[in-house]
Length: 502
Image 1 (cartoon, rainbow, N blue to C red):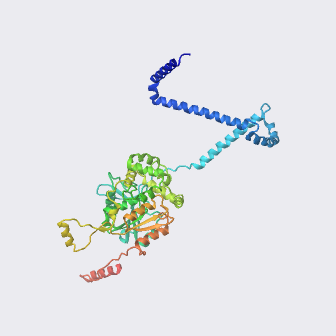
Image 2: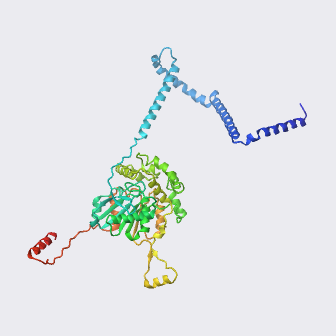
Image 3: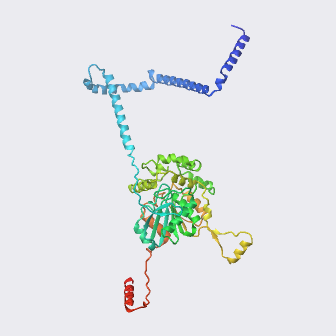
């Protein structure tokens, strides 16, 4: 052995050589990974040793708890085995019964496990139904820019209609939706003409090269004129279809008699929302739906991947799975109904007819982007007079008559209080910025239950909008009773014609 100074010198030299030799390796990522794996393996070995010691202490000693309790079961087990010993006669003579029966029991357990897994798999995985492509059947009109819009007409004829209602459909829907389950007799009773149309790129309508909410409102106005709606009409917006109803109130208010909204969607990122309103909206949504809104706002093109795996996959599915919806009990019971399922499948087949993800992507982006206006702009309020001589002269010429901005007609909003798709906090926000809108809160109703396949609900809606049903307009042909100038034969002929028309 050397002196302490020699040992210290050797230790310093060894440490210096080690640092010089391994310095770069210590800082590398690979070295850190190897050391981490080594540490995990060492901890695993120590854990296994600890488990082994616990087993030895529990079973190895005569006075252990497990040995005492297993010893009590030894007698009954021997009695049962003795009674079943006659089965050993059916085993081959060269086989040990203990070994043979252990193998048989293991095989039986394994067989039952495999059968149970196969049975559960058959019951839990329903057969997927493929989407059907139906023949073209819609009526279409030509727009000024060369595009076609497909539409569907229900109710009374144009010349007998007391009221006209135009319905822009919601996301993943089509002109076939309208008001689901609405009876033709109810439309006849109120004298209503119901018009629904496919948004650009949906169903049989041509896509728009760069659509927004203003172009959507202009399409609606031209469509109304093309199908003979010369007077003012009502617009009906359900769920995300409410976006296009809001746009109509903003851009074509002179064409509208009023608006009927059912759980209308608004931009969940609207800067005018309070923190409480925004929290009440987002807390009702699933994590996946929140993520989809985030993608629509920040990375919209990535949504195509999800659309291709769901409603653009060519196979049918559930609306709550496809759109990541959280539903209440009544809504869930409704979507499980065969009547709803038949309607939903046909509507989806028409909606995705063109197999193009772009219109769905555009619709999703419209929900979360800048609309070009605020809901507060629709509020009825006095128009502020500008400054200057021109504005002063206009105020004198108007002789004190007040000018108003915003929408002058009625706005009715129905909201289910158990709606988790468009939560009540969203319509609370709408009512705050549009205090003139009539709110109809529906206890225990969800997103679908009041609007879908409810005869009594539909009657209540029309009664609220139009009052007592008066039926269609009567067409009266007026004939001039004055005598026709000319010879006698012409006068007799004119009299005969008048008598026939009257």
